[in-house]
Amino acid sequence: MSNFNDSLKGLTGYQINIVLNDGTKLSGQLAEVSTDYLTVYSSENETLYYPISQIQAVTKNSKDVEALPVTDDHLKGEKMSDVLSQSLLSWVTINGSGKASYSGILSAVEEDHIVLTQGKDRVYLKHASVLNIYDGTKKTASENQEKSSSSSSSSKDNSSQKQDSSKDQESSNKSSSNQKSSQQSSKNQSSTKSSTKNTKKKQQPAFYYDELEGAKSSSSKQSTSK
Image 1 (cartoon, helix red, strand yellow):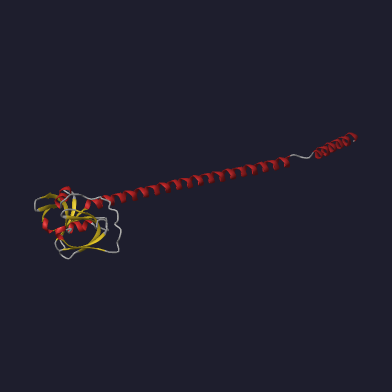
Image 2 (tube, rainbow, N blue to C red; image 1 turned 90 degrees about the vertical axis):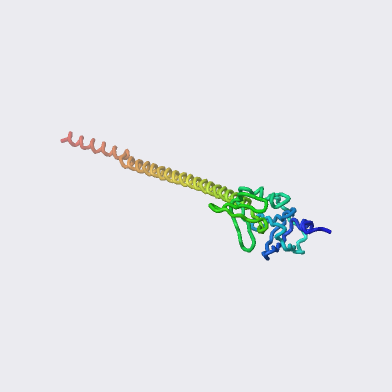
C-alpha cells in the first residue's frame, strides 16, 4: 500500500487543485513531492511551497492523461526547513492561517518558527501556521528579463527608425541637390540663348555694308561733278 506522498508523486507534471485545511482552494502544476511539502508552479509564474501537513485534499482532472514537462527551476530539499534555509536573506511572501499574508526579508529560520523583516518591523511566524511560501526572487528575475527584452526591442526599433530617417534625409538632400543642379543648368542654357540672340542682333548682314559703300561712292562722285 502506498502512502499519501507516494500517491501524489504519480501526479508530478499534472495540473492539480489543492484544498488546504482552512478551506482555501489553489491550483497549479505539481513540480515535486518532498518529505513534508509540495512544490507547485502557479499560472502566474510563481513557485509555491505547501507543507503537506496543511493540505486537506488534492484533486486532478481525469481527462488530463499526459503530464507536462517540469522546468525544475525551484529550490530543492527533503524538508520545508531546507527550502527556508536556502531562502535566507531573500524576499519571500508567506501566507498564514486565514487570510493573513506576510512579505519581507527572511532573516532567520529557527527550530519551530521563522523571522521576517519588514522595514523596521520583525515578524515571528510559527512553522505550523505557514500555509505556503512564495519565493519572490523567481518572478522578479523573470520580470527583469522581460523588461530587458522589451528595452532591447525598443532600442532596435529606435535604431531602425533613425536609420530610415537618415536614409530619407539623405534621399531628400540628393533630390534637392539634383533640382538645384537642374535649375542652374536651365539658367545657364537660357543665358546662353539670350547672349546668342543679342549677338545676332548686333551683327549686320553683309549686303547692308555693300549698300553703305555704294551710297558713299555715289555721294562722292556727285560732289566731284559739282
